[in-house]
Length: 261
Image (cartoon, rainbow, N blue to C red; front, side, top):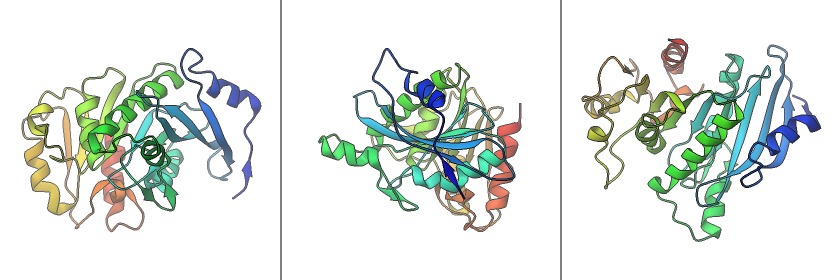
C-alpha cells in the first residue's frame, strides 16, 4: 500500500471550515491507494470539543464524497476500533469519520490522543464527559459535508450516547448502536430514549440481546431495528471485525439498515 500527501487545495478547505472558530489542525495527511476503489484518502485531524479540548479524528473519504457516518468507540478504546470497519464502509461507498473520545485508551495499536490530552489538562474522562466530544464531531461533520444530516454510530457506552444525543438533533438522520445499555447512574436510558422518532439500529452479542430488548421496549417499533445474532457474537462494534464469528451477518443487517429509506 502506497501513501501520497494530499493536495494543498484539500488541506486549505479542511483548515478553513471553522474560520470563525478555533482553527482545525491538519496533523497528518495520507492517500490510500486501493485498486478496487478510486480516490480514497485518510486525513488525521484535530478539532475541538465544547471545552476546547483537542479531539483527534480520522477522516476517511472515498470518491470525493463528504463524510456522512460518524464512528464513536467503546470504553477503553480509541478511534483505532474502526480502522478496518471504516475501510469496509469506504468500499461500500461511505465516507466517514472516527474520533477519539476523552474516555478511552487504545485499540488496534492506535492510542487515544484525546484521552491523553484530557488527562494532561486535568479534565474528567468519565463516559458522560465524552458527550461533548461526540457533539462537537457531529457539528464538525455537518459543516464539512454541506449541512447534510449524518449517521451516528456508537459502540458500548458511546452507543448509549448515540441514542441519547442523536434523537434530539436534526443533524443526525439515523442512529446505529452496538451494545448500548444502562451504563449511567444518573440517567434512566430506557425512559430517556422512548421517544426516538428516527431510524435506529441496535445490536449486541447474543447474551446481551435480552437486556437490549428491554432497553428499547418503550420505543416505537416503526423506528427501531433490533438485530439478534444467531451466533454468540461480541460486545460493541467489534461485531463488525473480520475476527468476530458471524461478522458477515452483522454487516448484512447493518448495511440493510444504512441503505433502507
